Length: 163
Image 1 (tube, rainbow, N blue to C red):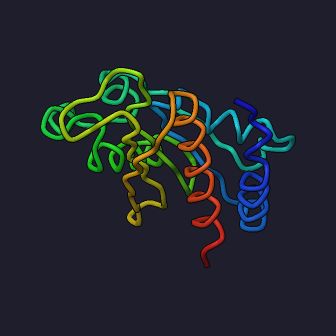
Image 2 (image 1 turned 60 degrees about the horizontal axis):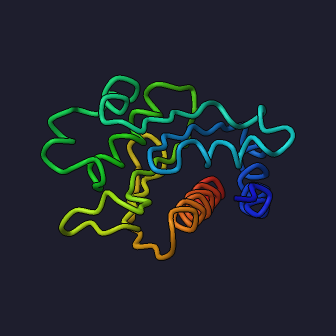
């Protein structure tokens, strides 16, 4: 996956955050740190990228982000509730003002009834103002992960540009 292919969204994000003196954090499961990597591939990202959490396992989501294990048990790791809790946890455990979280089934395995391969939940926003979106992405594992990164960066850029 070519990280530079995300450059336009990263440039928008960097410009908006720099103009406001804000920083972001990421919380990633199915992308394994690719959103953070795309951000930090840009020179100068230390001015606006605060930290990234790679929480691939349910235990990591609980231990590092404070996601309630009961929430995961009730809704599954790939759910709106968990994505929102991941984003909230990233904000609570960082100095960032804006965060994005992704959790999904990139494949080729892992599908469960109602959650086929390509199901991804994305949450983003600021403290008290989180949004979430379910993505249903096609293609192989690499395609799902690349599309997830692109969507996360797009949503972060849009949120950073909001007054």
